[in-house]
Image (cartoon, rainbow, N blue to C red; front, side, top):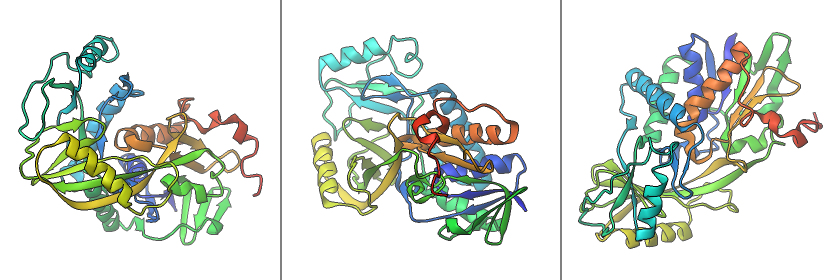
Amino acid sequence: MVDYIIVGAGLAGIAFAETALQHSKTIVVINDVSQNSSRVAAGLYNPVILKRFTEVWQAKEQIELLHNFYAQLEAKLQVKLDHQIPLLRKFYSIEEQNNWFTTSDKPNLTPFLSANLITKKHEAIDSPLGYGEVLYSGFVDTALLLESYHAYLNTINALSDTTFDYHQLQFHEDGVQYKEFKAKQIVFAEGYGMLLNPFFSILPLDGAKGELLLIKAPNLQLDAIVKTGIFVIPVGNDLYKVGATYNWEDKTNIPTQAAKEELVTDLKALIQCDFEVIEHWAGIRPTVKDRRPMLGTHTIHKNLHLLNGLGTRGVMLAPAMAKMLYEAIEFGTELDPSVDIKRFKNFASSFYQNE
């Protein structure tokens, strides 16, 4: 018997798996590959919601834990994952400049927004009004993380690449059994695939399709992330990730020509140099209307747990939410009410009524 079966091997599943292993727990990870939002994610992190100039929820705590968590993974996997580079918000008007510097004086945002106007010139970007700099920003190489961590799980015989069959999950007094695997607890970290999960599908998870481009632009020469309506992230070797779109209707992982054209149009408005589209990705972000993750324990089956709803900030949220859920399971620590699935009171009474 292992301590945990973890269903899902994206950012959430990996974060919980690693948290459990760091506490000397035994695990089996079921890698249902039907969802690929973690694999195609830009991996961008920053502590400020630039659209509204507000602090990301628990930003300071999440950033600190993020760096420690990925540093430990880098040492373990012998790969470079966490790239800490500035994020520059291009200004289009004097009013935007004024709003930035007014906002940077707010006590909760002062640690994250530089009060200095960045006037560095990038040959391929026309920016006469300069940029505002977001501090403590960067990106995590999510594709490399998944590839490396899955390989590691294979070396310890803890990864099963199969689609999870909920009908084969059995409940016992001392835990659960799934096929040949017995465990004390099971954690579902399936992302948008949760909607097929009969134990948690009634929860209000939505999906926002996002599409992303990888371009090659030798003359762009950026050493920082640039953010306007889109973001441009330098990932090395003259390659850049460009994104991202939002589509609340299309729930497929298929890249679309319309999204590609939208991103290319926005990119041409930002940069004045040639580029080539190398790759085009799409994935469904698991989102919740109140913009908070969904963590918690099944109301009937007390060894069934959920870690989901990380949305667009998966690399920031995953380590913190995995830690929070692990401590709730192992030590009985109360979950933050804003992420606990108990907050969906209208759904709690009707959970799993068809079981």
